[in-house]
Length: 305
Image 1 (cartoon, rainbow, N blue to C red):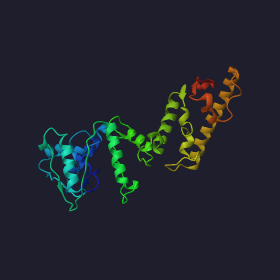
Image 2: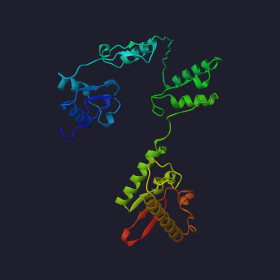
Image 3: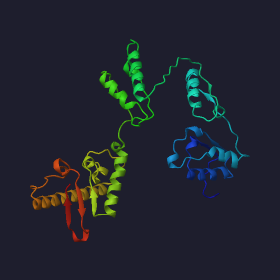
Image 4: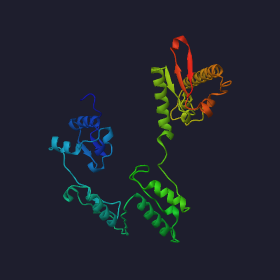
């Protein structure tokens, strides 16, 4: 421990409620390290959102139970971000989700600003969307307010518990312009595309006999995604030699697919086959399934569905 622990003497862990078991083991090393002068954690167990990756345990309690002689609990109950009206209505809303009102520590307001807060109760998602629309119309009628001054926060854009889809329909029906943020599909994320591309080729190496290339992702699900050759956004730098290897491999693969397609098309009377690799995923040849025989035999069969 003396040889491996970094020479940090004062440590602060923020968002401690999201600690996972591995991180906790690392933190214990710091806590027990003789040269650690102070170890402070900050967070709120009620705001833990990473249970899916192991952050489901109350490590605040573990600290106070196991290291009761080393830790002092300090409750930060003063809210400096919100006005008193917002804090009061939020407290009432949150309290309904606790078994006992005593379990919820009351928050104090540290702001001197005041403003009116309104809330509405809706019977269902459809009625909630209609109520929001009426509020937008009311605000829009005020000469001092613009649509750009209105923001709507939703916990989910697609969940069945959300009124989001109904609200969009109403906005369009009433010719009210809107801009949606955070609704992009994950598959359009550049980082995720890179991961999927790598996984695709790893699986292909592991099982070269059966490969499926969905038509809607064929434009980026290839090795050139990693090199920027297809005008992709490059997230990390590769050497020119590495880029050439990846590009050559993709070119070789596409050339083989075109040759296979021509052979199969001739044998089945489907014409002369595709002229270019992108054509493999257009028209009647979408959802192409390529089934390979043993690589050593260098024989390929193309099945179209």
